[in-house]
Image 1 (cartoon, rainbow, N blue to C red):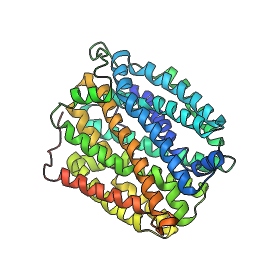
Image 2: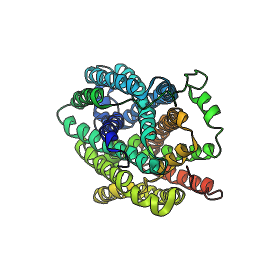
Image 3: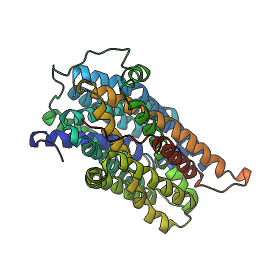
Image 4: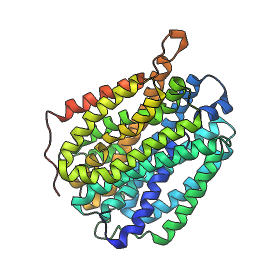
Length: 407
């Protein structure tokens, strides 16, 4: 971990916070088909459509609130924003545990999306305490935290889901509460008067932030690539529970295990392997490698019919996950010290737009490609769309390959 010793415990708190944010996506996945069936009934395809609505509502709020919360943290500091969000998140999980209708579950997802919009603040904290040459590597730990969240979330959802569809939410509420207590005692404030920026509503929204900070040289291209990659990557949380149920007949426990393997691999790639890849390849070549690798990984998943091969492929496909921290490292070096919260809020919004659109598109493709009335049985179709998006990323990236950004 490339941080001074005095920052290591706060750094751990930040990583745990990001893990809990990632759990907000992964926790519900293994139990979602059964939970929606319990609340609404209907077919698996109809449950997938509701799952897309729930995922989209969560992401919409992250999109709308990410720049606002990031800008608030530039003005009032990272500490109060992070602690308040954890308190709200703990309460939100309790509400989800008691939700007796799909509409209350939807309302809880909306509130959860607001609370999880502090990803930008947590990432800005990391930018505050990182040397320029260490930013990509430390942003890799951000990705590793999301990978661990993909382990912990689906495992909690899958294992505790065997005891009932509500049990995972109680566990998540307890975890968020304990992390809130830890943060209260260990988290310092990194926003000093030197870098404190006045809050401006004109910049504290996605469009305003994009108009202002998007004018920085080279940033728009990186943001476009970041959005396309995230859109393609969201195929996993969007359709994995439905894809594996249709293709292999997996139950929640096996879905959780497979997502856990994927999360462990993501954590290894972005927390460990990227510290070897970035110094040797550089950020630009790491991005290129990631696009090419993911292109072939999506083809493999679209074609796989063996459950054993699917389990083998699941951790292997994470080897292409170097793209996100490399892109974030490039963008963070472009922005100034007083713009890190604003930039990470904008990055969070781009990720959220991808998370808004991708579940809707991917679940619709899954619905139509597995509809018995149409005589179609191709549950891997959404992965072929992600493959095409990787080809588009390469088409954008290759003609104008930028040299690595320097501090």
